[in-house]
Length: 100
Image 1 (tube, rainbow, N blue to C red):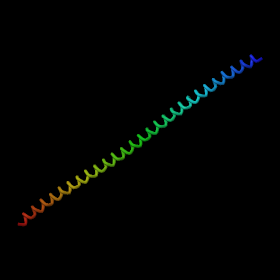
Image 2: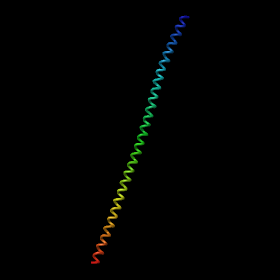
Image 3: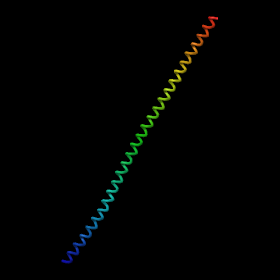
Image 4: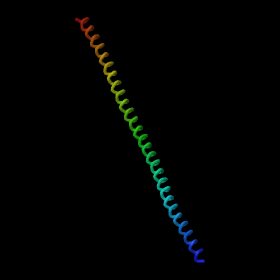
């Protein structure tokens, strides 16, 4: 009987050590999975940040383009007004010559 109980103790010790070994492996597996999930979340966060930066850049570009367009329109209006003023000055000069 003592022989059987010694064998049972040895078997229990072996299975117990296997369980603690598998617990360690399970913890490593869980840690690896959590690391992987964390990396995925970080990558998604970086992607969202990049999209946000792209939207902000496009907005600034459009604003700058709009301001440039307004400046060009104002310059064209100024040139048009200057041409009209020059035309009226020429007309006035001709009228002045006719009056003399």
